[in-house]
Length: 53
Image (cartoon, rainbow, N blue to C red; front, side, top):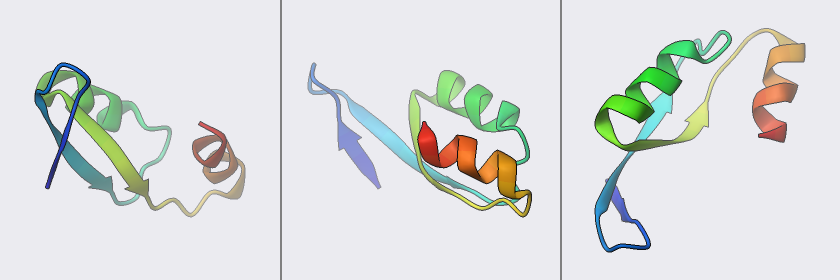
């Protein structure tokens, strides 16, 4: 699925399994002009940080 940006461009929406600290997610967002819309993480403190941001 894709969302439209303010400029009318399409943004890829991605989900992340076993997200860890999110480094790969950030790289994918940057390279593909994507937006991470959900994540899955087993580490509770890291999951709280993702939820906050």
